[in-house]
Length: 233
Length: 108
Image 1: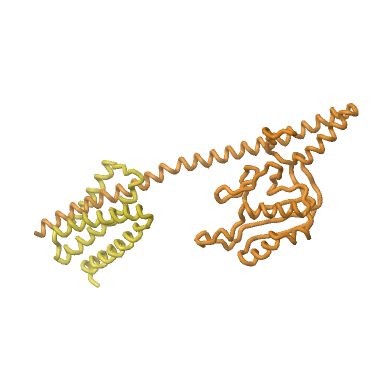
Image 2: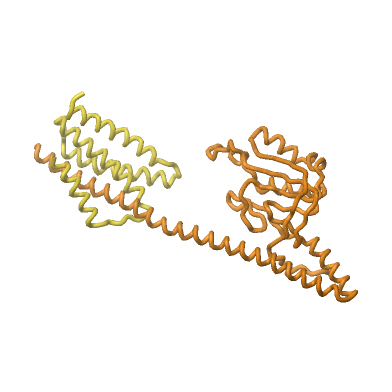
């Protein structure tokens, strides 16, 4: 009887050992299988991001070249000069030239208090809609040119969420979000609904909301101005 | 002593055979390990207490593992995390069995 019990226990231990090693090695296997793929993805993202930055730079440089060439050409005669002035005016309105002027800078940041376990964790973060409302209020307060974290807003600019990140002009932003607006009036902006709400949220949730009036620089739009379907009528 | 040798033999066998578990099933294998660990410790305990019954042991060994896997499978269907319940209950039993074995071997 005692012999048999040891035998049964031995067999059970063998099964246990077999299962144990199998489980441990399969977990390790799965982890090892994931690691190179993750590194590959990160490398790919970095590479593409560099490519985008490089091409953005090229667009700006080429645009400057075109402007300079146009200025040269327009200096030649009266008609070309008028044309050149019109072009410069249009570029100003399209947002393809860097501008500076007196204006407002609004800085929004996530709350340091946020915890992801909280059911309303969303209340502690800045969302695309917050940014949209702030930008709208700035335009309503007289802003003539606006950029978010150095990304110029033009007629075709979307501001939206992609997962947990805010994307402007299809470029992901990282907090804090700095909205620079040339020509915005401080008093008018502070009277807006969203500014008053943010003042309240700063106390309630600890969201960052800083406002400063000063000389603001807004860079040129570096993306592609793709107006394909729309035609003047 | 012999059960320990069995453990090593099983481990060596697994290393030699290199069985691969599909990723979807690896959670079930992990739980089967916990259930088997519980049953084995229970067996060792009852052997030390001279109440060991091989039929009861084999049945509990197989049925515990099956029940654990079945519960987790059901939990997956229901989107309720029953694996936590299984791990907690079996974990408590493992500690109790280990404590009983320790008392038996060293006293106190």
